[in-house]
Amino acid sequence: MEYVGWDKVTTGTIIESFSEPVENVAYVRPEERPYSPMNSHEASVASWRFIKPVYNRDICIDCQFCWVYCPDTSIISRDKKMIGVDYEHCKGCGICVEVCPTNPKSLLMFDENKPNEEALSEWPEKKKKSKDK
Amino acid sequence: MAEKYELQEVEVWDGNMAAAHAFRQAQIDVVAAYPITPSTPIVQNYSKFLADGYVDGEFVMVESEHSAMSACLAAGAAGGRVATATSSQGFALMVEVLYQASGMRVPVVLHVVNRALASPLNVNGDHSDMYLGRDAGWINLCSFNPQEAYDLTLMAFKIGEDLNVRLPVMVHQDGFISSHTAQNVRPLQDEDAYKFIGDYKEVDPMLDFSRPVTYGAQTEEDWHFEHKAKQHKALMESVSVIDDVFKEFEKLTGRKYNRVEKYMMDDAEVAIVALGTTVESAEVAAKELREKEGIKAGVVGLRVLRPFPLEELKDALKNVKAVACLDRSAPGGTLGMLFNEVSAAMYHSENRPVINNYIYGLGGRDMTIENLKEIFKEAKANADAGKLTTPLQQFSGLRGPKLAFF
Image (cartoon, rainbow over all chains, first blue to last red; front, side, top):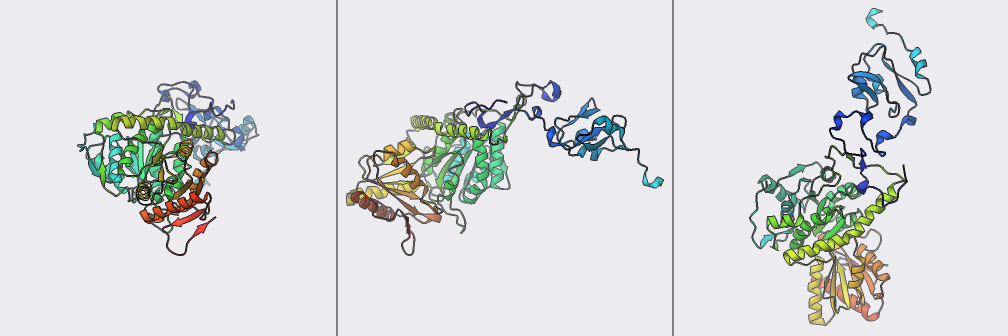
């Protein structure tokens, strides 16, 4: 981003979302939207995170709870099918893990530096319900 | 479609009713308000006009003045004409959002009926609220009577919404002395008033869904300075639009406005510089002194407090020998604002008159013609001596032992 002078900044410090007008934006997928360079979509906040959610496709039932609850729209889902986590914008809050209803959970928090393959290999077994004891 | 309101050529309105009619004629999209004495009748009358079908817009009842200004700002950012009114404590509560409105360049119109700030609690007029908000980045227009409160409110929309300005505008009038004193007011007919202001021109409206914008961005040390400098430049350069609007209004009504108003200043030896209704009282005092005592007294009233009319003020005071600056606000440990600003203007002028400062009228204390004559006479003594013969700061109309500083 260029550090322009006072004569080049926007009036009222407004920030345009897109670099050109977009009609019916609700029907345009994020990867097809012409985000402006100032849009927060273009900024990575990955460095804010020290634990990350890892997604396990084998257990997920595509209930979309994580997609609904994620406060930063960092759960990527298409046609009601869960795809994964947007690690450029996820801040590691853990809400997706909290709301995941499967047993074991389909999303779990791991250390930011642990490779996802390793995390998947450590996935816990299904927990027995207390009445089965 | 709004109903047309039947108006006489001359109406008997107090300043609040005058402002309410100006609001009505502007056909504001959103008025969000939390009424407070002495500005209450503005929004009260306005809401009645709206309920009776004379306004095609929304009136939003909110829970505080902070919310009132926030709702106005938001509706303005969304793309509508917006305005509200307040006084005193309510104004103080709005202050945070005043800076937001000017920074976001949303042309809110705020009618301020000037009233003292607590504590002690007081509902009467002084300029404490006006002084509190003077650095908020708004254009500040000052009226001296109900007619001017009406005229300047109409002009405030046209000035603030001009695409070369896009800044919020305050219109001030003195609590009770102007707001509750019925006088003859010559209004424009509805269609003429609206035509003068014109349709609202949207700039970066949030409700343009194909081009969404963010208002209220965060900027730190890398961007903030540039944005504030650009905002200051817009405020400084609004003078040409203010002058144009004053001229256009004169053509329409015959009523002439200037950023600095002068009364008997052509040959004046001593002058009072003041704000609000005191300007008119000082004119009466100056006239009497000229007729009965031969003192060449004149009055300078500030019509536009911000952007500060430094050059015009220098010009207005270029021939006087002594100036008394009257501040109707507790100075909080320094000289009055008008004293400081007039002194700054005159410091770099060829003419260096003797300037002193009077604090007066706090909490609605009456500023009498006798008080004003006394101030003129002290200015005359300063003029004759060519130097200060009094302390720099005095209190006029105060009971008890004489109080003075500096």
